[in-house]
Image (tube, rainbow, N blue to C red; front, top):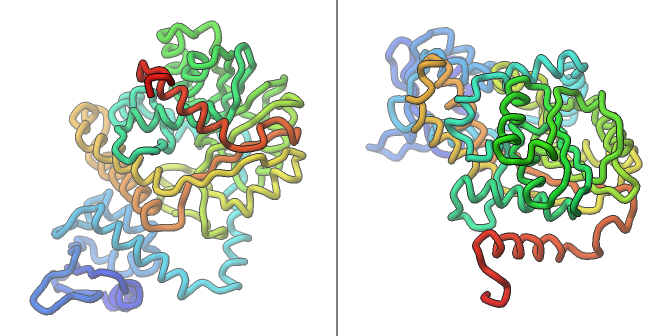
Length: 416
């Protein structure tokens, strides 16, 4: 316990934590007023955690919670992870120097080389899980990406609808245009764009589970003739599209492939076309990402910084016509997902065991806290091949959203 205690004395400068070690001895770290208990108390049921949590907490904390060798006796998992994320940024600032940053930069390439075969395996690991799992916590459109909360009181379904409307506004869609959805998921966005604007959409995914369900949903929505889905890697595509959209897929491209990705978008995009890329981003600019997330949730995944993305866009010949940063929107989305997942666990526990439940609870809670208290955000890049592809100001985005929102509410402008 000596090694862990030394680490926690340096790490915990915000809030407080109590640890019951494997010998049932109690230790307190952080600022605990006399007569009060720490904000969070954990009990360690495995002596190996005395050194594992000290040398690599970002991996072993999640594993210990999954396996039940770490129990939370005061507070909740969200409370524990909130405390960890609040302290992590300050701890990194104190300990990261120029040499460490350069070592991290070199190490990222070794974990980010996503060949076509590896990309398929990575996608299957996460997205070929039972569709019942995703239906248990996602919205009706099965949007597995950051929702958009122009009003913080929106429900998850309303916020995801707002996200799709926001993307449609940036795409400046016209009837009968050809649209490519790179990383189409279960087809929710493709179906929405076809119904909203009368466009024809090709969606690609690397998940067979997603492909099967997306096709069924398009037929059920009455747009099966206009929306087609394919099991393809973006590197296998050819043709010409008026619009390209990619939501929540860029995190799986891999750092060494950024230039190839944007060159491919340029080759596929019509001369007067518009593309929108929606991705999680890091404000740190040099982190390797969380090792527990890479091992158990998203193998091959990487969260990019804009400083890594924009040079690849520029070298591709595409023009950045708009950048928007969404702060805290994903934290709100993840909170709603976590609450729904736990509330609906009874509907899927016949498929997965308790260890899986703990793994996904940890994934959703840790991701939420990373967005709420860490250096993560979401960015949306609007790209074009020509300077005049989009209007001179962003007014068209707000005008479109206002018109669509009023239309969906059965209102007209004159009644506003």
